[in-house]
Image (cartoon, rainbow, N blue to C red; front, side, top):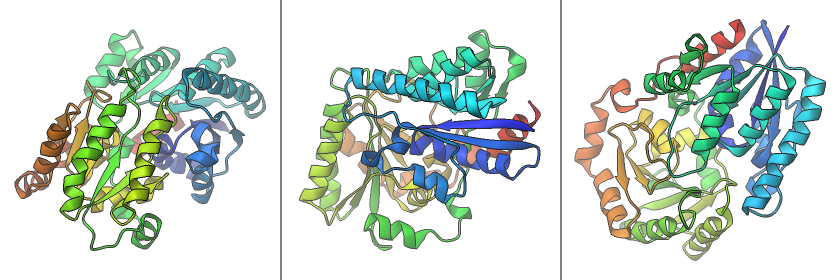
Length: 377
């Protein structure tokens, strides 16, 4: 029986791949294998491998790769540990297909290992552009190492083909993350409010910002300006729900700023390491806006018709719909962008749009489409 192995390094890629993994697991045509690494195995980032196991998936191999630092040297050492761990994992598991998502450094390490082992690689979310992060180069490198490609938009599918990939192996699947999950779950509200410390009556903004790895200061000034801009909305009674940054270089300084703000105003500012996929989608459905530089503001949030303020250069070049307002990073510009996102006129305009109008990444049945293709490849 075919063995399909998913490699996940963060809460973000796991949340997107989980619905596809579920359908492979439930199928009688293949065996699901799961390898968890990077942030999933770090207590500092919430040990999110437990979320994978809580969802009922068996994690076949756990590859610890993160050290304590966040310098470029630390990241390269982390990549090397992923490679070393996969040497043993692939030798033992003997997968027939390996699936990775996106553009992170651990995904690039995994992709390189599949080439040496001669295992066909399936890449999700290739062909995209993020000019403000070195992820852009990693993503393109993974595309050239992959055999099969599932693109989130027709434009990105065409871009993959223009890079020299076989058109027969490139599929427009849409983005699984654009499928609304919170609304189909059995009322996760209690878990959400217990985990965040928010109350059902609270108006709140989600803030999720990661290092902008190609900017001179890693995006630190953008973070400081964002916190400054948000103060005005805290005074207006909005609470701030911060999801802490990923493990990219420079994350510790950003994390420190968030945690200090949360400690100073614990009633209004709530910091969480990871909400997990279901609770994050619940937050997207309940919030008044999402602010930051995460792809989730462009891909997942529009499906909930949630206004998004995209800050700085990290997502520059990526496709976006009318729910996204861009702000370069100046504190006053960010404040004005958030204020616009919260106006009744802007919010009501989004509610009148069809999903395929508001979200360029949405395609009905994305997860099922990918799973069905994987079973047939």
